[in-house]
Every structure is written in C-alpha cells, then in structure tokens.
Amino acid sequence: MITEKLQKAINGQITAELWSSNLYLAMSFYMEKEGYCGMASWLRKQSSEEKAHACEMASYIIKRGGAAKLDKVDVVPNDFGTPLEVFEQVYEHECRISKLIDELVDVAATEKDKATQDFLWGFIREQVEEEATTAGIVDMIKKAGDAGIFFVDAKLGERK
Image 1 (tube, helix red, strand yellow):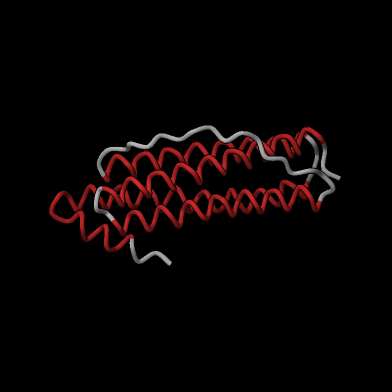
Image 2 (tube, rainbow, N blue to C red):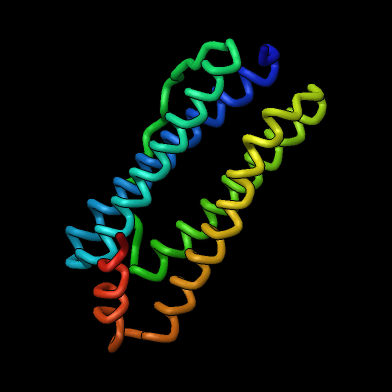
C-alpha cells in the first residue's frame, strides 16, 4: 500500500506532467504557425509522451492501492520566440522536471518505499535522455544558424 504522503507527491507530479504536455502542445501550435512543421511535429510527440507519463504514474498509484487524482492544470504561455529560444525553454523545462522527479525519489526513500523508488528510477533514467536530446537540439540549432534552420526543422520532423 502506498502512503498518503507519497500518493500526494506523485499526484502532484501527474499535474506537472500534464502541464508539461500542455506546454509542449502550445509550443507545437506556435512553431507550426511560424512555419516550422518539423519542430511542431517533434513538440507534439513530446506532448503526447508527457501525457503518457501522467497516465503511467496514475496507474502505478492505483496498482499500489491509492487514488490517482487530477488537479487544476495552470495555463501555459503561448508565445515563445525564435526556434532557438523555444528549444532552450524545452531544455530548461526538462531540467526542472528532472529536479521534481529527483525530489519524488527522495520522498519515496523517506517513506521507505522501495517499489516506488524502483518505479521512479525509470523516469530518472529517461530524464537523462531527455536532457541530452534537448541539449543536442539546442546545439544543432546554434550550429545550423539561420541558413540551416530548415534542415534542423526537417530533421526534427523525422521523429517517430
């Protein structure tokens, strides 16, 4: 059985994951409007991934005898700047999510819940990849410059 404290913390992360999903969806709409359909597609897939994380966390809470609860998801911004600024924001956001998940593992450790620690370590490992991927995109955009931005756009559009 999952403790009340841990259940509340994971439910908070579910809200954060849904906010992330909305953020990336808003970024996707913005980039599509700006003519970067490949980047928009990449961000839309990222949005779906964040929503899937929320659902995975909810299922985990339920499996452990708890109740998954949705809270109010705050509004997200709708204007983001240049492609470089967008992906710098994506990278910064992924770093914030990593910190939140690190804090969740700390709560699970305090609650002496090894099963939840194990569950959350999957997200820790995924965040290492997310940070590396988004840092790589920022670097690619910087190296491409104005002349190569549509190459980057096409490359990001290849994401499966």
